[in-house]
Length: 492
Image (cartoon, rainbow, N blue to C red):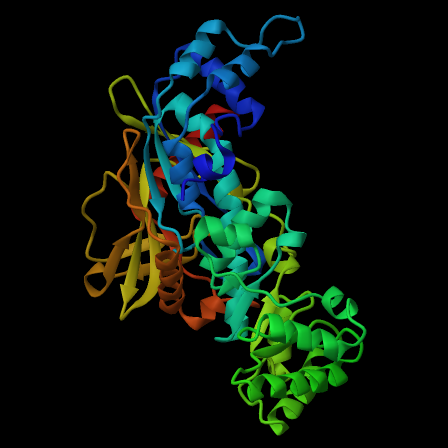
C-alpha cells in the first residue's frame, strides 16, 4: 500500500519540526550540508514497564522516503516565511536546493515485527547531513507510535492466551491517522481483526463488528431487535445482550438462536459490554450450554487491557473473544514510546568516520557513538543476547563480553561458536534506491509470533519481566568511555 499516494495524495516533506528546516538551512549556509553523517533511531526504555518492544512502522518509512520531495507548493509556503526583521527566513538559493533535492541516503532497519530492546538502533540513516536531519521528525513520528501500539497489542494478546482479540478503537483513537496507524499496528501485534473499515480497505485487515445498543433501543422489545438482526445477518449473528438485563438478554438470544437453528443457521456469539464480566460470562455460559449452544462464543468488551484480561482469566471467566478499543489504540497507560534520533558519526575530510557522543547528566541519555550494528545470538531457537558492535569490526574473539551501556557492572560472556547469529539491521535503501522488499502484513504478523516464541517466558511477563541482555562489544564500550572522558575534559 502506498500511504503517501493513496492516503495523503501528495508530498509529506513538510511533516517535520520547524527546527529541522532551520538546521538544514544553517548546514547549507555553513557548507556542511553535504557532509556524510550517520544517525540512529532508538529508544531508552521499554513501554508499559515491559520486557520487550515490537518494531513497527517500517512500511510507512519506506513509503515516506520513496516519495520524499519538496513540491512547488511546499517551496512557495517556505518562501513566504519571514523573520522578525520582516525579511524572508530562507534564501531563494536554499529553496531552490530543496526543490531539486533528491533522496540519496542509505537506510538500514530492523524488520517490522522484530522484538527490540533499549539502546539498539531500529533504523540507521547514513547520507548527506541535511537529508539525515530532515528525516528525524517523520521517522520518529512513524516508528514511535506504531511500535508502541504493536507492543501494547502483543501484551494484550499474551494476556488473552490464544483467545481472539478484536481491535475496535476507531472512535476513541487520536484522530484519523492515529486510528489507521493504530489498527495496522494492532493487527501486527496479534489482533485478529479491526472495526475500522478504512483500515480494512487500505491494509487488507479483516473487519468485524456486531451492533450497538441503539439497534436494540430502536425496536419495541429486545427480542424483536434480535429477530430483525438475525434476519439481516443469519450467518454472522452476535447479539449484544446487556441493553436492559444481561441474563434475560442471554435468554432472548438463545430463543432467537433456536429460530436460526431451525433454519439451518447458527448463532455465533453473544457480547457482554458492561457489569461484572466474570460473573455474567459464567452465568451466560451455563445458560448457553444448557440450551445446547456449546459452540456459541462469548465476546467481552468494556475498557479492557492486558491487566483486566489477566484478572478475568484468573477468575476463570467464560470469555472466548476479547474486544479491546480505547486502552489499545491510545496506549492508555503510556502515551509515547520515547524513541530518539541521534547522530553517532560524521565523516572527516579524509573520508574517515569520526564517532560522536552526546553527554548528559543522566547516563541513560548518553548515546552510543560510532557506525554500529546489532547482532542477535540464539541457542536452540531462543534469543539469548544482543550485541551492539562497530560495523568496521569483521572478526571477533572466540569468547566475547558484552557490557551494558548504562551499568558497566552488568556483563555477559558469549561464545559465538555455540550460537546462531542474526544481523538485525537489514538494507532498506542504498543511495536513495529501495533495495528491500516490503513483506505483507500477514508475513509481519507471523514474524511477531516467531519473535515472541524466541523470547524466554520471563521476558514476556506483564509485571516485573526479566531483563534481556543487551550490551556493547568491548571495543565499542572502550571507544565510548574514551569519548565520554575526552568530551568532559574538553568542555570543563
